[in-house]
Image (tube, rainbow, N blue to C red; front, side, top):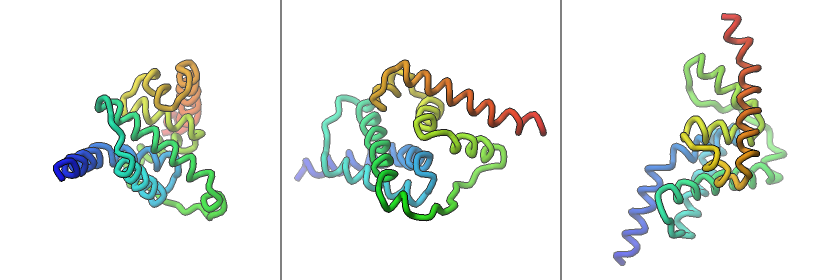
Length: 161
């Protein structure tokens, strides 16, 4: 009985600590807040049902990110997702942030993921490579290309102001 309280407390802590991050990662992958919230529920359901043992907080965070990215990929591969009409769904931002957010959202998914993890979650290339199960050079290349594409797409907007 005491064990279930410990598990519930751990799940609640994880939910409080990672829920915003999970929704942000899912949103930038799926471009829909409703879909992002569905994926977030699935992530925490997996955490609850599998109850993995983590070596550290960093290991738990990496697991949560990995599961989120995998569930987003599964979601995008589903027939339902491919055949439904895309609905416009956005999060409130100020006007300049919308411009940057729009530019990031136009990037390919793999580029959006590395941009998010590097700049918003403050992860190193090595950490991102481990989470995404890619080589460090691949992640570094994706980050470089993403920055270049963002620079090109945002250059016109800022020069014309």
